[in-house]
Length: 241
Image (cartoon, rainbow, N blue to C red):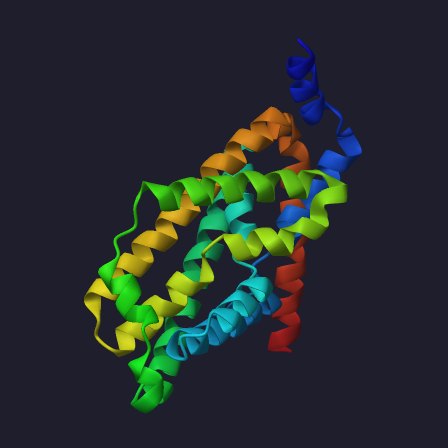
C-alpha cells in the first residue's frame, strides 16, 4: 500500500505551473531556429572527428552539446497532447537535423577521412553489429530519465548525463562519414540505430507525460508553439533585411 502511494505521489507532486514551465522549456529548446541547427552541425562535426579518430572522449563531448534530444521529447509531448502542429514541427525539425548531420559527416569524411584518420575502428564496429532489442531498451530507459527530468525542476541538471546515455549523434555522424566511404552496411546500421533510439525515447516520453497528465495541457502547448513560431518568423525577416 505504501509503495503504491509513493508511486502515485511521484507523478502528483508537480504543480500545474511546473508542468506549464516544463512544456514551455521543451518547446523552446526544440525550436528549429538558426541557433538550433548550428548546434546540430557543430555537435555532429565534433562526433565525426570522434569517429575518424576513434575517440570515445570526443564522442561524449559531442553528445553534451547536441540538441537533438529535445525535438524527440517534443514529439512525445505532441503525441500525448494530440497537437498536430507540434507533431509536424517536431518531425520536420528531426528530419532537417538528420539532413544537416549527414551532410556535415559526409563533408568531414570526404576531407579528413583518408590517410591515418581513415584507419579507425568505429565504423567497422558499427558495420559489423546490428541494432538489437537491447538498444531499444537502453533508449527507452534514457527516454524515461529525460522526460522525468524535464518535468521535475530539481532534476534538470541531470539532462547532460541523459544526453550522453542517448546515442543519437554518433550514429548520424557515423552514417555521414560512412557515406563518404561508400560503406552501405555502416550507413544502414547507423540509421537503424538512430531510429531505434528515437522510437524508444518517444515511447517512454509518452508514458511519462501521460502519467504526469499533460494531455490536458494542449492549450498551453498551442500557445507556446505560436510564440516560438513568431520568433522564427521574426528571425527570418530580420535575416532577409
